[in-house]
Length: 308
Image (cartoon, rainbow, N blue to C red; front, side):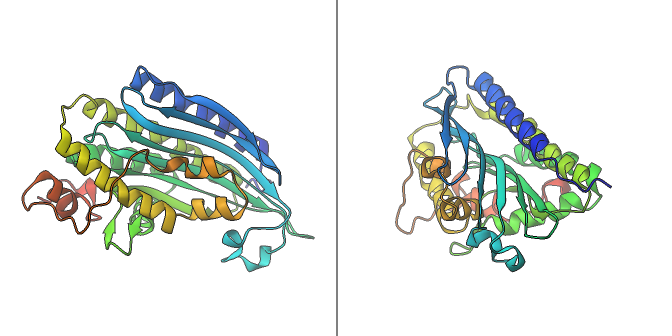
């Protein structure tokens, strides 16, 4: 069993992952280009934000790498680990959100991350986390099934129950309690992952990180040229409000970034460029807009086939 965390190997992988995802998304868009914005954090560390805007396919997207550190663990990281309070720490990861122009193309989010703390007179404590999830505005069963099949394939080498656990964790995590509804159709989510075998744990993070673009790109290409009108666009902007609500109220990464003195522009990069809130809006029964919440946003098992 490999016990010693290789921090440089994780960093090299994450920077390469950022490059690969940006290149694939630029190829899909055909017009938009990711600008590169390197930044330093006065308290320690820094990162590279890659942002695309007003493309042919992507209205706004960001693929961020960060590697930050400090002398004392932030409150959000010690809530469940009081024994690490006061320990020096490092955190690094790639986090991304893609908001497409076309309402028939779902928004996607992905994140893979590594955290390590070094308590005094103790061995380093590390863990991995991450996952990805899909937020459609107009649902297609084919897209949901393909998304989850790719997610399961990424998990299968790491245990027969890994996908089911991470899928359930994702459904639970990306749930808007105040709306009593899921944010999207789920995917994968895991955190605090440490089996004691660093190479295996790192391998899991890489498998999840690598599979994101394989899951998302086919869906984008399938839907990006579907014709839409003002009705679909208005509904997209309305449903984006749920995305904003989750990120500002519940998201652990947002809270950690702000509490640890992270770069606000990069932390809030995930928010869509345009959004609307309508008072007490209820979709007309039987419409595609109603079907989103009635059929798709129900936490179902997409690998069991159609339940209609």
